[in-house]
Every structure is written in structure tokens, then in C-alpha cells.
Amino acid sequence: MTGLQQRFLEDVLRNPCNRALLEGLPEMGLADAWLVGGCLFQTVWNLLSDRLPQAGIRDYDIFYFDPDDLSETTEQAVEERARARFAELGIVLEVKNQARVHTWYEAYFGRPCPPLRSACEGVDRFLVGSTSVAVHREAGAMVLHAPYGLDDLYSGVLTPNPTVDHGPLYERKSRDYQARWAWLRTPETFKS
Image (spheres, rainbow, N blue to C red):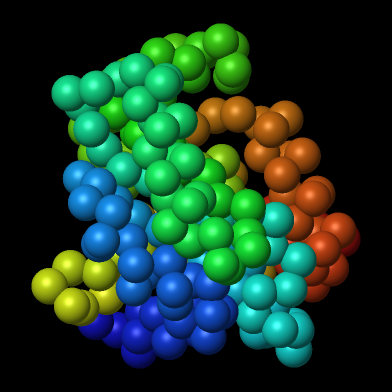
């Protein structure tokens, strides 16, 4: 593990909600379950901005992978069970089965998505490459998935995911992040 990877895991755990979710997630018994996205990278940006680690984080996302049950009803039941388990945190919690993404993706994004093969493949498809991060506990140890590395995340660089072409959605998401962390940069801001 590199120094930056270790720093990331330490930073993520400075958010008490992330810590509680990562400690309790194995109890849920979900296959291939990961804490993903905003609650992780926004914690880092908050710390880099001298804010409280959990400041302004809108929701906390858990991805899991169950190819044997693609029903929306089951996914909702899993989400409700997780919300009940972590109710004391007072957060918005979203839980999504990445095995069923292809069943709704085209209706939502206007283009098809092949069936994913793991929860981490969902993370690999985040619109902003530097925000593609996931963490879980495995045999008591923290495991990190960051397919595009952590350098841009810590440098505040927001680049489009090289594997997912959703230009207008990427731009909207980048503008939202820049409105909350003004020091973040996109390739367009490098030119100014």
C-alpha cells in the first residue's frame, strides 16, 4: 500500500459516519459490499479545506452485488434494513445492487450499460474519474478500490472518467463540486 493510499484510508475514517458504516457493514451480510463515492472523497476534500470531515455530505452510498436477485423490491428491502441498522447516524443512506444497474441504466442515462460483474465495476463508471473510490473491510483490514488512483483526488483535479462518456452530466457534477469546494479544478479551468 502506498503512502497516499494509507493517508486516504486514515482520512476516510476521520469521518465518524464512514467509520461506523465500515465497522457495521460486514454485519449486513451483503455480497461484495462497499462504501463508495461521495462520503469518501468529500471527506477528503473537507479535510483539505479545513472543514469538519462530514460537513455538507448529502448522502452515504453502499454498493453490493447480488446477481441472483435483480428485483427492485429486494434492493429496496436491503436499503431499508441498512437504514434501520444505521439509523443512529442520522444520515441519508442509499444502498444499490450493482448487478441490476443494466436493468435501469438506459432509461435513466439514455444509453445502454452492459451487465456489471462486481460492485467495483459500478465504481469504475463514476462520471468523474478522481471520485471513483470505494472501501470495505475484509478479514478486519481496510481494502481500497481506486481504479484511477488518488493523485487527482488530492490535487483537486476533476477529469471525466475515461471509460464513460457522459459529457453534460460530468460537467454538471463538476460544477456542483466546484460550488462547494471552490479550489477544485477541471481541464477547462487549467486554461484560465
